[in-house]
Amino acid sequence: MSRGVTATWWYTVSGVVAFDLSLVLFWSLMLLGSGKPVGEVLVVGIGGLVWTASTLPLLFDYRHRDESTVTIRRRILGPVLVAVAYGIGAGVVSGSWLVGAVPIVQSLVLLPWPRGVRLRFVVASTILLACLWFIDVGVPFAPGAGGAAAETAGFWTLGLYSVFVPSLTALSLWWWDVLITLDRARISEARLGATQERLRVATDVHDLQGHHLQVIALQLELTEKLLSRDPDAALEQLRLARASVDEARQGTRDLATRFRSVPLGDELANARDLLRAAGIAADASIGPDADAAPADVLGPVIRETTTNVLRHGGGRRAHLALTLTPERTWRYEITNDVAPSAPRSADGAGIAGMERRVAEAGGALEVRQDGDEFSVVVTVPAEAAAR
Image 1 (cartoon, helix red, strand yellow):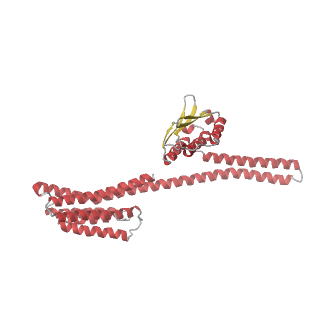
Image 2 (cartoon, rainbow, N blue to C red; image 1 turned 120 degrees about the vertical axis):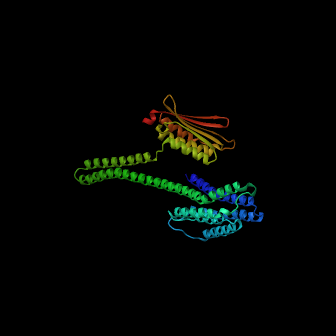
Image 3 (cartoon, rainbow, N blue to C red; image 1 turned 135 degrees about the vertical axis):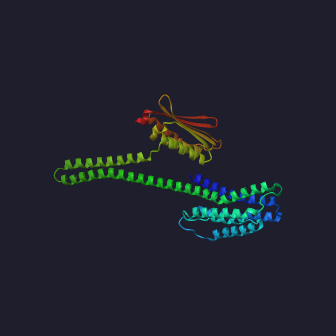
């Protein structure tokens, strides 16, 4: 998600910069076509490039803005002054009020206005630009050879595009704001979910331990009362208290195991992403019912084999698969290429440990090596998941 947010931000920046550059290019071509001297056209064109570059600090400041206030910092004031200077110069050279006003309005749109102010500013500035556009009716923004038709077309094209560029910029910024709002909502939802999960765990631990501790306290209290009168009965209560302690310990262990378990579909996806992060071209084939597979057996196997690929493989590709065969057997396979210089494990304790775990569930583990390709195949009966 963070990569998507960053990519959208660069799309927003490139879109606004493209609006400004196309506007400067359009002005320059229209001035050149209307017979203006090349020097004046260069003033508008090169000045437009400087003005476009000056909008970048405004855009980057907008990303980290405080929505509650408008803070006029030096890095904001400088680009605005550049826009004012360029607007005055371009307006004087072109003889157009519209050309002079658009750079100033465009830079002001990029300021970090409080919520709701930008919309009112864009509406007011669009009306102002439209009025200036009609004031410029006599400005010859058209190729001289084209006649009156070309001049009219140039007038309408220049006017419409120049008037609505601030609105297009505001829409781009609004889209960025929507994305940021959604991302913040996603983060808040994740934090709320984590908080609720912690509360649920705390409640379960409290209920489990509270019950057993209360029972143990009563048994020890009874032992204290019986100790002088009936030592045998007191000893029996001590045995019961010790059994309660064992039950509490086992219950806590079972609770922790339940919360540590991860669906195997997610386990495989995490393994694939980990291998990709290490520079290995990894892909995974996950069956539709993968979450029903025995996670307590295959989960550690997936983690161990992924670690082996990272530690001992040294290759460039890997493939993971978890499927349910027609014989009602879960089949997990990981295949990777092995670099000739990759280190070899001396004792193979990891493979032996996995083999014992799989055998206890009634399954089998097979290791294959064909040239530079290494595979581990694990099969576990579907009944293991039910048990």
